[in-house]
Length: 366
Image (tube, rainbow, N blue to C red):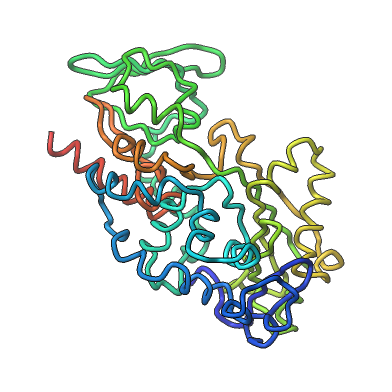
């Protein structure tokens, strides 16, 4: 089913002012310091203007090392720096980066995301909830899954791989013909790799950046945004993006998700849970001033504090994509690597699933 509703207008929030996607004239009245040719253009139109034909060479789904080397010029700059180099004004860059914090992201990383998604106008979710996918897999695998078992060390031999584990304080060992590591490098770097991989792989494991993000889910007594002809989607210049997570569900209650990234996520770090909840409500109110009165309850997940994630998703800093990506997905002897970080579709379940198919093929061919 569609991930988000197409009914209603989305919002852009710039310098505290709200602009609707169904009102082209609203952005024309903004006080932003834009160049004459930028004024009145929606963020998507600005992107089209400044990206131009740059995507023609960047849509290769499975680039090799030589292709990454050809893309080095894109990888030397941050995303805002690249846009400025194309002639964009400071405030135009702010409009084009609403909803996120791209100051530490490689321009190549962002351009690749745009190129690979192409002209997609709709994304999809599993009817009944995305957790149906892992639950279905778990049911099929049955008792072969071991829960609450942490990996402490990996040692590779000529005929097998041994994994040292910790379960309820007790150590153990698992031995297998092959090992598939589907964990992020942010956690893999904390595991003792007793048989080191190749130098470029070890460097990638240690260096790969992860995007700091926090997601708030707020349950509301009603879907008040629909009364104003809004979809529930919004992007703000405070690096916050919101969605209507109750779209397509029955009932009258709603769920708005607000994801805070980069500097906004980092600002939450020193706060206690109560203060974080208040901060999340304030972030949401920038786009939806009526939200606070409608909220019943909320939950929060800060991925940087999750010991099994330590970051939301792989997000390449300048210089990392061309130097690290050729080694990230490559098998090391009997050890294979899967997960969103090993796929061109970083940050997406599509990438994780695609990597699983690649690893299965690697194993079957050996």
